[in-house]
Length: 193
Image (cartoon, rainbow, N blue to C red; front, side):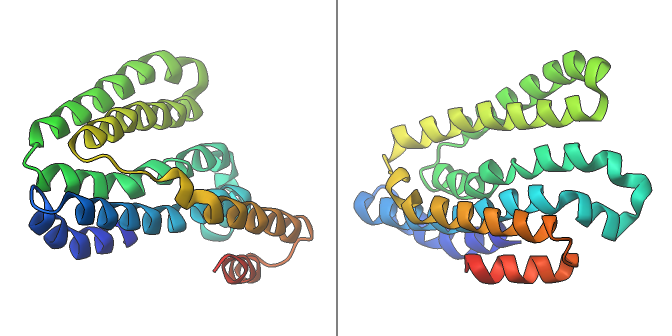
């Protein structure tokens, strides 16, 4: 839901600034991606830590074998959340052809890896194929947007990553202490934000 909200709120501004005010465009894009990553990091890390308890809570113990797949797929949030903003940047500059390449690269890699990994590793192989395809597709998309309008995100991660590591450590301790899931989620979210 957060990426959709970010997309809806930033696209009109990005479209207005594209080709006119590249410095402001870059600032809006960087702030939007930072906001997306501010949510994606704790969801991916915290979600991976509480995945067994979450699956048990929602679906019961018979679904616990899906834990590893969920943990792997939660990592795709790190790519998917910023992708919607990068897609907006491409649209704002009228460079939709780059999105077709992004989609094609991602789909082809995913299909090929599924053929290789599913027979050997089943659903976990499919999760790894999806994560790898998303990673490689997004490498292309980030590169494409950099060529359109260069932006910098790494310095903005200096607060997100330590906060996520702290939250993840505390979440792991809470899970290890066998606190109820909802209490663990509430305390973890409170610590992060």
